Length: 111
Image (cartoon, rainbow, N blue to C red):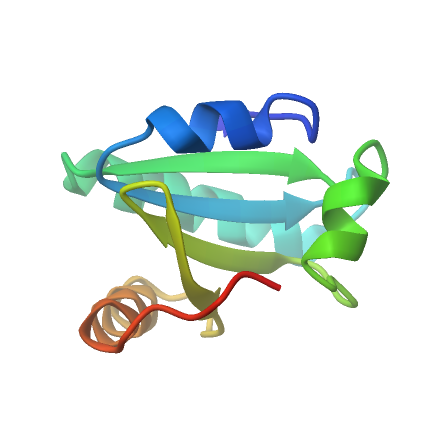
């Protein structure tokens, strides 16, 4: 899992191939810590996936742009393009199912 800021996000995303799960977190968020552990494991199982973490407190521009109203918030990108938000329980099977279903749907316009 890699920390990323709003200043480097779009430049890095344009160059990215494969999937990126963008996770918005905050230092005091207990649910965020649970999701981070789950995403670290999921990232190790998939060669085509990177997980990027955005500190919502330090990156308010991305928080506003992606309309993040609760944490943790998770968004899926593929080959540099926005796919959709991922909403699921912090369980491996639920995460895998949500990602698989999101990839089967047509991409959305970015927020």
